[in-house]
Image: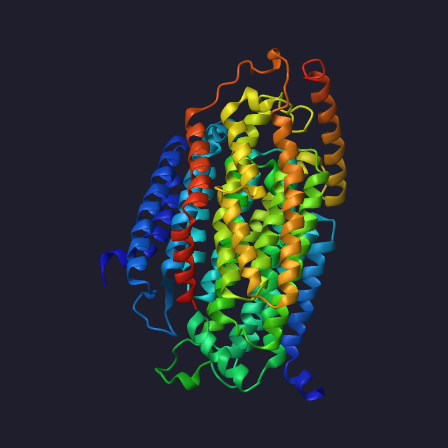
Amino acid sequence: MSLVQNFPFFSIILSMFCAIVSFALSGKWAKRAHLAMTAAVLALSAGVLGFTAATGDSYTYMMGHYSAPWGNEIRIGPLESAMAVCFSLLMLLSVLGGLAHIDRDIAPSKQNLFFIQLDLMLSALLALIYTNDLFTAYVFIEICTIAACGLIMARRTGRVYVSATRYMIMSLVGSGLFLIGLSLLYAVTGQLLMSPAERALAGLVSDSRFTLPLTVIIILLVVSLGVKSGLYPFHTWIPDAYGYATPAASAVLSGLVSKGYILLLIKLMVRVLPNDNQAALNMMDVLFVLGVVGMLLGSVDAIRENDVRRMTAFSSVAQIGYIYMGLGLGTDAGVTAALFHVISHGAMKALLFLCIPGLTEVSGGRADREALRGAGYRHRLAGLGFTVGALSMIGMPLLTGFVSKYLFAAAATSAVPGKMIAAWVALAVSTTLNAVYFMRMVLVLYTSVDASHRRAEDYHASPVENAGIAGLIALNVALGVASPPVIETLARGLAVFG
Amino acid sequence: MGSSILTNFEEIASVLLFVIGMIDLLVQPNLVKKIIGLDIMDSAVYLFLAAKGYIAGRAAPIVTDGILDAAHYINPIPAGLVLTGIVVSVSVSAVMMALTICLYREYHTLNLDEIMMLLRRREADETLRLSGRNGEGTPS
């Protein structure tokens, strides 16, 4: 075993250790520790990605020298390490892009707590990406939920308490359903590690035993993770939670947190749950329909919204719908498209959420369309960033959103005809709807205003935040221009994921 | 059917409790009652796990009288899961209680519906105030 194979475990422990140490640090040092830790995790994950891409295979890493089915394992392949690289990179850029606002929104004595939540969040996300154990996944789901709640309520205003409460209620229902599904799965298979559980389930399916419990397990696990990631009818907490948190928290929440749950769901679907029995096939159809409905109705809600923050948050509902539609296609190409969109949406949404505060602050603190007129002139980088993010969302070529939409459309060709037509129509309609609300916003930002409103008085952008925004713009373009290696890594990773 | 209800009564009780807890968590407007619902829901899962791990006639999985034969003891894994689960649900309940305290200090009520109403009223006032302040400065 080479040293680099230890890195996934190191990165989980490093982020957790950083959280513990930060309790004793001041806000300033906790911030430095967090940034250094995220950069270190990024470097470690890049090393793992290099290793797994070279071998093209996945390996399991035993914890505490107890072999399966007793011990705890993490499993690392090209897909997992690529996701770890993207998540830590997005986390780093999102925190950099919202750094000055963290200073402003959070009392200095509480700042180290905010960075502890971020550390724990990264550790939980990495664990969700790598783990091969169902109960460990549950524990880290809960850590992720608590850390997300801490991030939402960091601003300490009445509004975010309400958002955090609504988020927690929905999220806890999801966790409860996941836990009971997990217990049922353990009751019928007697396994908690994913690979032995899969073998046990395959045996049950081929003997047609426990058909009803299996159906219930599939429904519970898929629905619970759907609730937690904001799948359409369970999305009511999204606009509040993403719309009012501090910008870095909004970017991390929308870009990463729901994606951690989606990755776990993909892992369960590919690695654990039987995918050729009737219940699993019906579940795919349900996910497809909910995804399509989410794509359309999320956009309709966004169009009706006047507040740019809530509009962008509603657009997340639509984008989560894209991911579930890809999963619901039931083909490998569909899952690859969904995985690419996980990364792509993270890059686009983090950029949009980091640019919005810059635009509202030069418009008297208001976030409605009337006040934002000409804001693109008053804060040029935020205006540019928002425009790039919006164009990417709509699916402009050379930007990452285009590649996502192309992959979804291409994946739909190999699905059954009914789903193919439905997916294409949904993509077309949803793109038009995206264009309606995002282009309307971009046009508002660049409405010509008289010279006195082209300059923002006493507004000083922070250079670090600008660097974060610039990094995300570059990431959007890079993913749009140089997507083939990323897609290839994801597709090869998916092949050895199961 | 009748016999399976009799043999699985713990599981049936736990599913019923789970549903009661979940409905409580979702529809009760009172935040404290919501937390109680959450705890009922989590405890129901622990009852389920404990019932699954129990094998009639065997001892708790602690080595007694030097007997090392696994056939003498019940399955220890569900007990381990329950313990971990309890730690998780205690932390989650603590977070929810902290949130409830924050909300009570801010709005002086525990009723989430009333809080939402107060919030909307405050937001409407805030929008009016902001648009009043920027009224002259808004480009047209």
